[in-house]
Length: 214
Ligand code: SAH
Image (cartoon, rainbow, N blue to C red; front, top):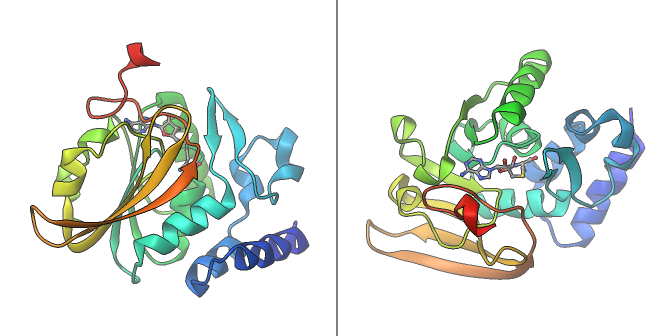
């Protein structure tokens, strides 16, 4: 289903500058309509964020592709995702042969996505909790991707990266954020790249926004 629409989406992402073939192949193979409510299924292959309930969204395909490209991963790498949401980003990573660990703070979203992954046979380790603290049990990670907007860069996430590992995280105020790409040099030093103008839902937690600040 929707094969033609998926091909067109991949062409659009190429035009917008996505070059990583592994990312484009994953987007061409993962059926985004399965990750959103049935009623809006026909919107799945437009390059926009869409509502997934509970005031949350599935990220825009271009944003998913760009963030994944910035992680510069190799198969079998280990990635921590903060903000599982619909599971689409995790499914893209899983398709690329990445070992995915993903944390979601909303229990209803977490259990819905766990059920979907069981049904689809997607193997990712999901947990319900506050991702701003990271997941020390499986650290260090080759990449960490945060799919919600943060006021700052959580310290634990920097600590839980391997040397040369990358952290991709939107940082800013509640409305707009700059995508920060940190490459770890050593425990104290990071190279930082910034890409402006993104709009994510807020990252809520101990090292994110506090519920009272929203
Ligand atoms: N990656 C998702 C995008 C989901 S939107 C996808 O592919 O669909 C961001 C998600 O982050 C929301 O579901 C929200 O509940 C969750 N979130 C916000 N703060 C969080 C935190 N501190 N820890 C884990 N998840 C969080």
